[in-house]
Length: 211
Image (cartoon, rainbow, N blue to C red; front, top):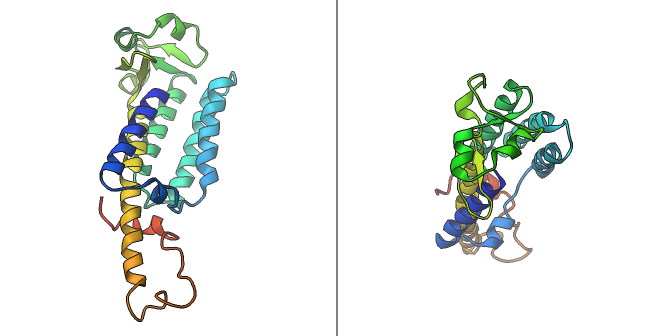
């Protein structure tokens, strides 16, 4: 999933820059409860490197992302992110704490299936696999790092890409509009004490400024 996530984030950020977004606007977007999102990524990372914690990592990540999404309902892409992580968690729990991998997908992606058999986190998919269509079955034949991803992985990547493509554009438009508004004659922010940060509530405006 990491390769897919990086590719989509780069693509989304490129689209956002082409459409007029700026890195400065992106980093100034107000985000509530950022530690919840950091906890989700930490849980997934620990699940990858600490034996026996793979399924628990997905469960913790799902709860953390749900909390983060509830605190930031207007940020673009969070619904897709939560849906993808939840789907992966359900699949892992339904298959004894492991993510089944399709032999068909591995062959077409160029992934050595022996690595799947020797993994504690993954298991070969077969007719006994639960929720088989949602397992790692989509080949990603990216030469430097081939992978097999799931529908949940695609949803997670789509959510991240949507945020990277849309959020900086909306934030820049919000910033520009508020600067014009505060510069109008008679506006309290036009003269005197410094006006409030025009992006202090950008998260609340992201859903109303258009894509």
